[in-house]
Image (cartoon, rainbow, N blue to C red; front, side, top):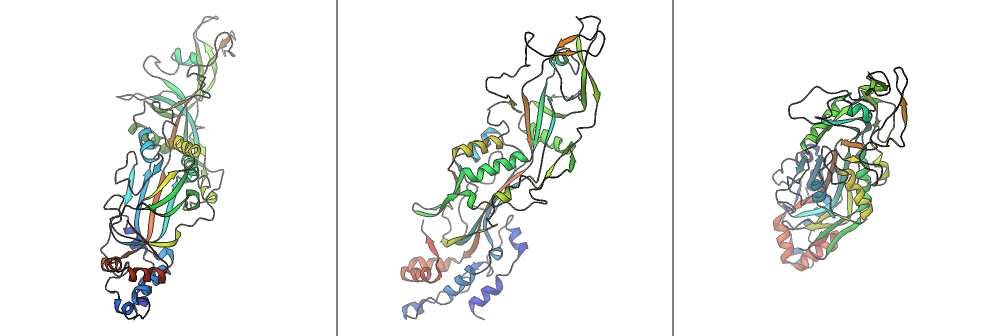
Length: 451
């Protein structure tokens, strides 16, 4: 059997082998290493008999293999189990996003899967044929209303968490002892912030692959390569509901790791109004509440924000127009670089737990820069509420204009190279014989990435 037929027969899909490469690199074998056991026939070149025989046939057979059968040579995948601390955003998502150069423990990234033994460098001579940049936001989206309540060292019984409360409710200790604890109106954003950040990521960055000083394999908007694997019911809105209990617990666990001073509490009471606790206008005004379970479930969108249709036309793996043979030990140089600072800055805001406000967690967000984080209105101009008890007294009520904002959900980003390992003997022979190397490049259409 010829070498080309052997290689073609050995290039059948092997899903288990590809999957295992995320954890451990198997030892070289004929199925994924070009040239192993097949020496170059230099005599054909010297005798003027044309191309170097089996070498060209082997490369051609490999290049003609379907992308899904090609081995993954290198892959790095980051998993974020929620929004990132400000320093993590600055380190990992600054002017350059370098997954291959990030190492095994990039700051703030919850989990890293990598095939790389030496950070940023290929472990073997590689014929790079395709790349992939995959983005996987959380597959569901919703927003929950609630309150942010003080984190305590010893733990206390949970206070009532109403849909709304006033300054009178707070200062008159209707809900808890306000001299020891605090509460703030809050929102919990699940999933959609990650989709929105990913949308800006692919438009705010270029994907650039630079080898050495002068070889530029690609430099174009990441939007042209990025791919989002499909989710169930991708992009579909629905009237489905999910319970919020475990989602809220996950968010509070994540924010505790980030050092947040407040826990998110779901709403479990509705405010009906207020009453004065003593007769006459001068009584202590306190809210009247009733318990509710109406906020235990929320409407949810399955499939995420349909980012995948926004990347329409992109495939899971992108073939290189010109495959490159890259020698081992050379820095890979495949990174995302900022090309649109407006969209890159918006992406960083939505990735950051503090939304870029450089504030304690969770951030307390005001409607405008000139509106302070204090109860709205004053005695001179504020709405009055008629008390429920007699006499029905108009009482000034004030509420917070700001909101504490939490985020929850996963986001995964992957970068990978597909192709074939190349035997050291082949590379050494081609490096030492310029005529032979030029003949191989001309016959197969590959390029040689010089260090």
